[in-house]
Length: 509
Image (cartoon, rainbow, N blue to C red; front, side, top):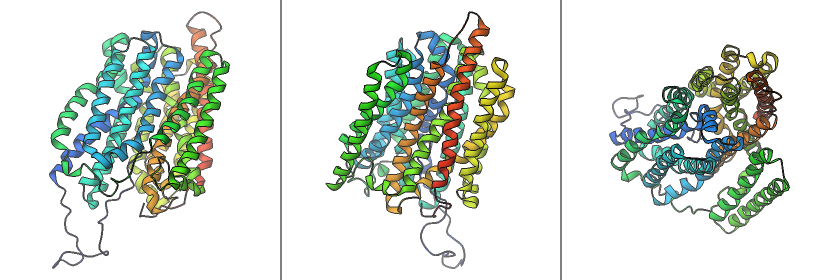
């Protein structure tokens, strides 16, 4: 899954009228000098970003082997993905503000160290509970250090060079998410089911250790704090209310089907709704006291922003769940290897990289239309996959999925990179930073919610009617078809919501 928290920064020269040049050379601009320490810092920062985003996709192909090795429940598989995404999202805003206050260098270091240790713990897990706890801590740690990546880039790179830095970051995001399923499949194929899934997590250890040592020496101390934002406090009460509300909603969505929807699941859903209402009331009261809330209420006075936030949630619910469904079907249902499951994702990865590489240029030329095209292609791809599962059944191969996954990947690439920029453009320029943080959180919440809902549909409709591989394959294919229908429905809703966004983005955003 791609990260979209990077600000919409262009590579144009800041300041001065167009055409201004250096004395004696009219019409030319002085060359941009990028400090050496800025490039060194970028290498360290992107090593961390690579790890965080690799773990959003590499784990998908390991889910069936984790299930067998730990005798894990279906709910545990959903928690492995949802818990990571939710914890990641909830940490983004407070971690960014903490970095502004005490220094982004050491917030990055702390988060990366915790992420590395949590990766070790994931690989050492002996049961469901240990795995879920370690995975949630890993997501929390990722949410702690990722905001420092974009913050430090803005602080150490000159304005004229930030576009280049963020373009490199975008390439790393694309490569890490595309590499995840293939690398995971290769590791499990090479080391076997029992040890392979543990090494899927431990691949982070050498990267993390090297990045931690490099961070001490290569992240410049002069870029630790942003003095313009250091006065922002952290809304701990708001964070507790928001976290409690979202967890209260996710727990019954993930556990309800497994438990047979007892009374406590409905009561917990009601509690989640109450906590979210209390969160909204607290944010309003906190703002009136002149404090800096976790989610500024006035952002939602812009109807287009409210629609854009729902769009972010729904879209990420749609596309994040695709390979959760396919990985489990391909291995647990159809009996393919983890490597074969990883290979299925290649068309989507290729399309995603191609689409993302062209999305900025197309957004400048076509405006919102590039988002419409992107979500349309994703919707076509998901409906195509649904129909292929429905009509072909258990005999489906990766060749039948190649065209729709390529189309969906291309559309996702068109949408992922510029979508936050268009959503943020619905608010005033002074509110852009806060809006960007909210969008980032909602993307992660959408991913967590999507996996919770899709997992409930997938395992809730899984009914094996007889012995043998054929009955198992038919049951998993039928359940995966229902799950893919829900993913496609999310995508259709996202397509309708795209039209709330502005047709063009002001260059200031």
